[in-house]
Amino acid sequence: MTVIRQQDFIDSIEDALQFISYYHPLDYVKAVEQAYLKEESQAAKDAMAQILINSRMSAEGHRPLCQDTGIVTCFVKIGMGVSWDNTDLTVQQMVDEGTRRAYTNPDNPLRASIVADPAGARTNTKDNTPAVVHIDMVPGDQVEVMIAAKGGGSENKSKMVMLNPSDDIVEWVVKTLPTMGAGWCPPGMLGIGIGGTAEKASVLAKESLMDPVDIQELMERGPQTTDEKLRLEIFKRVNDLGIGAQGLGGLTTVVDVKIKSVPTHAASKPVAMIPNCAATRHAHFHLDGSGPAELKAPKLEEWPEVTWEVGANTRRVNLDKVTKEAIQDWKVGETVLLSGKMLTGRDAAHKRIQTMMENGEGLPDGVDLTNRFIYYVGPVDAVGDEVVGPAGPTTATRMDKFTDMMLEQTGLIGMIGKAERGPATVNSIAKHKAVYLMAVGGAAYLVSKAIKKSRVVAFEDLGMEAIYEFEVEDMPVTVAVDSTGANAHETGPAIWKARIEELDSELAK
Image (tube, rainbow, N blue to C red):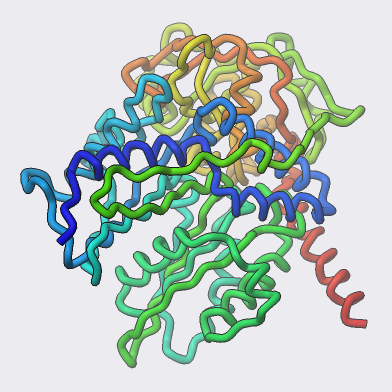
């Protein structure tokens, strides 16, 4: 019988969560590199370049790939021949202790995003606990751990359906994926669980995302099972949609599709689909009683040498002097470099502003949004001489419900976030002659280097959701919705879906 020390388990969880906060799995890096090299859409190519540059920077600096350092999901498979040196802690408590230590590490603090009382006060637990833990008892005398940190932007796009036995899984995926928008930060992976019951299918989908990227190898050897055939068909059909990197249109939307299936009831076909984003983060290790797990750091030379330069026609904007009149000639798809002061604010700040406006209190002291831009972000705490920690954009659609109020009542003229805006919000942007700019999701450390000064100006009690003032220099963004309502997340995928159909037709001749 193997004896596993609780401390070895806790240390391994802590080390793994720190490790995955700044090291992408190399199989994902290589897959994005391949997609980058073959990409023909310049917008998508630029986005992937920033993702790859950010990945290398995070590996070098040991700082988070994404400001959303995720909710921890841990699969623990305990051999029947394993015993523990102490029995005072449950496996859940051990995972939580490792999580707590990892997320409060002073050298690389990770953003605490977990809130208690989710249907009520939604109070931050401050240490990112509790984790979501799945425990299986398996044959053997070791403990196997698969652990991931899953960002809210991609987790929120999870889908689940109870299909009829005769329904087509591929058709459901192809119909459903466009409804997910780009908030899951493609290019990423799709995890699909099939069978069992509703909750089992979801767990299977999440667990499938722990597997390495290997779709190209599968293509070369050919499918041998139903699941492998489905993987290949879904991979092609999804990429044929033309959604592309960051939803801007392009050849690659997913770099792999994973499927796990189990038997189910004769009357049922449960299917769950969970995407992994451009900040794919997971680790896999075993404990055999000899000590904590050792995760081997990848070599920096394993990362591709990718550069990204702004084009000659890039628009440079001084945020301290910009006016509503000046933004009227900005065009959808245009690259803009922002310099000057901007304010930040996301879900909790917007909700509080709305309440204050409804109560006749006006904006909080120190917050003037007249002719200003607001950045949807919740940054990681700074360390050392940093101005701010990784500070990439959060999903803009969550702020849609507040946008008309903000544009109507505060003097705001522009917003910065990631992914698309809903139809009503696009109409509101056009109505108020405002603009929506998109920063690349999954490039948080890279974005933070453009931030030269940072200070909290309101709602300090909200932590990472407080309103900050950032002073930025040459922060790259794309005009996603211009003042006429032209929308890059509609036009880009439509153009590239048609282009892919043309390419397929040419190949078939």
